[in-house]
Image 1 (cartoon, helix red, strand yellow):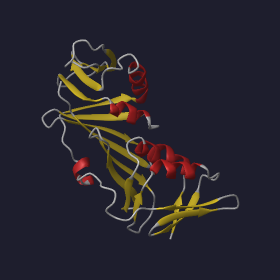
Image 2 (cartoon, rainbow, N blue to C red):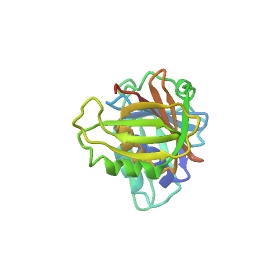
Image 3 (tube, rainbow, N blue to C red):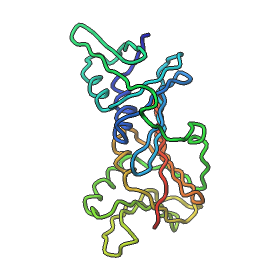
Image 4 (cartoon, rainbow, N blue to C red):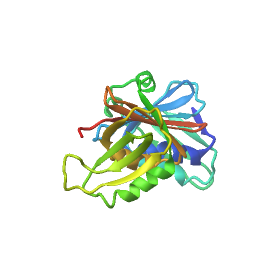
Length: 240
């Protein structure tokens, strides 16, 4: 079977690369003409990722090393490519190069026990949007507060701030930037989470990020969307 990727560069930049920043091994499945996966990391962060692939068949790809797949696809000069799919491999050939990438057997890779429907319908009581440039600012600030792995979303006086610090340790420095100057009517709260979400969002190439927080369940989500790709990160809250 032939799988056509019409925009290889976008597939790598907006789909493979963000997932590879989270984990090495992943299970891809085709569903409703989309390539989907749910993956997590050691910090408990989860991502649901989908890419419009236009494949009608229900396929499963047990990918042992997504960075390796990302790299070999980047070697192909053409932007529109045809990959040959078999149960245990993907292969490609043109006049200049060829490769064969093997999958793992089923049940070796363990995916999070969460459904796509559950992730997409998580309730929230706070919602706002931030610019991707804010993620770059926070990444720079992390060098100043190297002792902390916590990020606080602070909402007060109609403004939303992001702060890197650790309030459980009074000797840890802090670095804060404003995310939104016009958040009137938004519930006042201080919501801590693992700073790793900044690193993961920094691996994406999206301009806008939709943030939703469920203060009762202690969960937040960060959603990035283009015409072809969707990334939705689920980030558990931490103790203050």
